[in-house]
Length: 223
Ligand SMILES: [Zn+2]
Ligand SMILES: [Zn+2]
Image 1 (cartoon, rainbow, N blue to C red):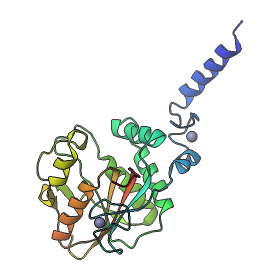
Image 2 (cartoon, helix red, strand yellow):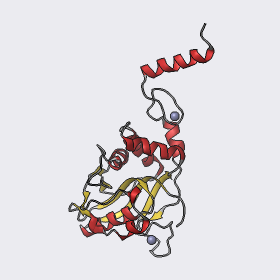
Image 3 (tube, helix red, strand yellow):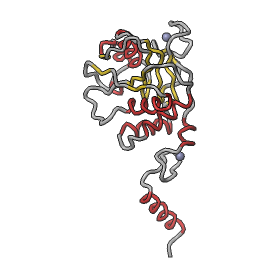
């Protein structure tokens, strides 16, 4: 005779065979990530200054400076989800997260969304920032274009010290001609904000007005 526990495990196994995905937060089968879980994870921390990464109002720049809008603090389940997306197992998580992110901010007046590009030697098969941007673009009906790329092979963010990151100039990015366009930058994770501020400067050099940045998860602390 099978014990109740064994029976439960077998039932779960059967369900898993029928629906080989399950929500990584609540475990619901047949769901890549269920809507209530995704929404519960999105609690935007304070916006930050796109030019210096400080919480708004920053001490250096004007109050109307472009902002970094973050969907959630990079911790707990949100951190796990971002890592799952990066590992490349569930590519479809990217647009899902982008769509949810779009629901927590008012639609911005933009011509173009530009994801932070993948590093030149990245082993990833896709750019997770681009997938998030696609979700945002779909909900907001804004064009998404990978209009920038790295010009140099810099170490990945995880392997870089803060000083080294801040010393990077906007020259590390090459932007397509975006003159006259009002653009928004998109990334999956933002820590110091230095990548976004350099990308913003590179876009401005090519004639764009950078209205802000949208990031799935980031730090909430004031440096
Ligand atoms: Zn769930
Ligand atoms: Zn600032």
